[in-house]
Length: 207
Image 1 (cartoon, rainbow, N blue to C red):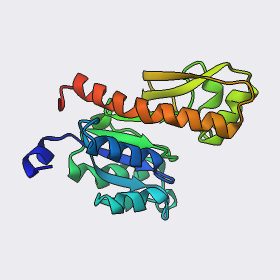
Image 2 (tube, rainbow, N blue to C red):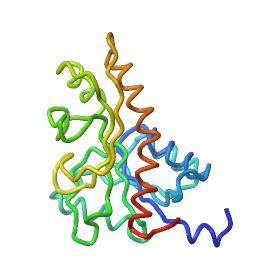
Image 3 (tube, helix red, strand yellow):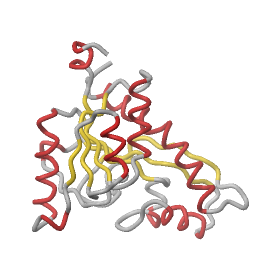
Image 4 (cartoon, rainbow, N blue to C red):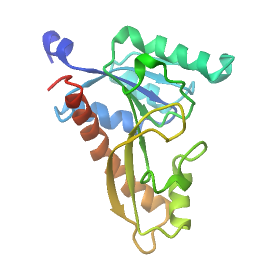
C-alpha cells in the first residue's frame, strides 16, 4: 500500500479486552481489500490481552488503559479517546471491549459494537456481564431456534444503541455453547467488516 493510498484510507480505532480474534479478522479483511479501511490504533483494557500481540505483529500502535487507574467511567473514557484521537480515526470499533464507555458528543454516531446475539429481541442475553459464552448459554437456555450477531451504534448504555445490521443463523438441535459460539463468530467475521464498510459509505468516507 503506497503512502498516498494509506493516507486516503479511513482509519479505524479498535478497542478490545481479549484475544483479538475480531481484530485479526479486520486486519485480514483490510489487507485483502475487502474492508476499505485500516486499523490505525488499538487500545486494550487488559494489560496482557492477546489482541495487543496481534497489533504488535501487524505494526499497529497499541496502548493499554486500565479502568482502576481512573476515578470514574468518564475519566477512563476520556483517557481512551485521548489515546486514539491523534490517529484521526473515522470510526471507533469495539471488538470485545468490556469496559463502560462514556461517549462524548464529538464521538456520537461514530462508534460501532458487535454483539453475539440478535438485538433487540435477545435483550435477555445482553447488557453488563453478558459476553462470550455467557451470551450463547443464555440463548440456548431460552430455547431460541435462531441466533446471530448484531452490529449497533454505541451509546452510554451496555448493548443499548440503535441496531445497524444483523445476521441470523439457526440454532441447531444438539447445539452446545461451543458449537453455537463458533457459528456465530463465523457470522461476525462476515458481518462486521461489511457493516463497517457500509457505514463508512453512508458517512461519505472512503469508497
